[in-house]
Structures are given as structure tokens and as C-alpha cells.
Length: 169
Image (cartoon, rainbow, N blue to C red; front, side, top):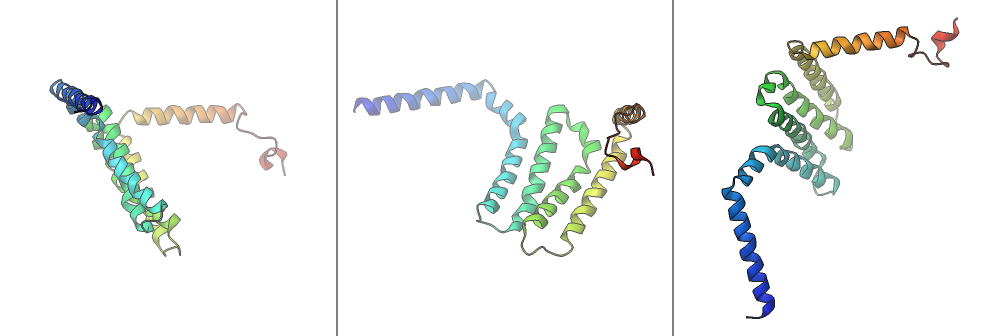
């Protein structure tokens, strides 16, 4: 054997040992439990790549957009706990809406009615998400934001010099 092959064999043996050791220490299990939502995101991004590299038609953007949104939602739930699914379930509709909207944006000629479907699903998703979040602490955040916005307008910070409402009639 040449010294070049000895180095390759030795490197392979070292890598195999490191992989076995990390596996026994639970590193791969931790990574699998933690990073699995990114596999969904990657599949969605690969579908986008297929379209933008002109290897697939625009309809692949429907599952591609949905998978990216679902992967992000699962990553959030993986980080803060899957109890959030009680409130985030309308995001499933939002994922479909995003995918259908992307299809509408990039399909040529523009398909009829697809934009209306995307807007309908998106609006329904946001309305349902709003009502599910009303039962959480998010309503307090919304209340504080509305109060701050009202104070900002009362203090005059929301006015601009070129605004027709400031000039009078």
C-alpha cells in the first residue's frame, strides 16, 4: 500500500470512530430531534430551486411554499413546545395560501381565480389565527401596541408635512 492510501484509510477509520462516538453520546439523536423541521424547509426550497432553474413548472411552488411555511411553524413549535399548535393551526391554511399565491405570481399566463383562492385562504387563516390568539397573552401585546400607536398619533408624530389632512380644506 502506498502512503497516500494509508492516509486515506486512516482518515476513514478516524471519521468512522468519531461518528460512532458521537452517535453513542446522543449527538445525532439531539440533532434529529432539534433540526428535523429544517428538512421540511429544505424540501420546500428545493422545489423552488427546481422551478427557478427551469426544470419544473410553476405548480411545484404550491407544495414548495406550503412546506417552507410548515417547516417554519414546526421549527417554532419545536423550540417553544408543540402546545403552540393549539393556537397556530390556522398556519396550515396560510401555507396553502402562500403556495397558491406563488403559483399565481410565477405562472404564465396567469391562471384565472387562483389569486382569489390565495387571498381567501390567507384572510381566513389570519382571521382564525387572530381569534385563536385572543385566548392567549397575545391580546395584551395587541392592546399595548394599539395604545402606543394611539399615543403616537395624539402626540403628532404620525403627521407628515405633505399630508392633505394637515393643510385644511
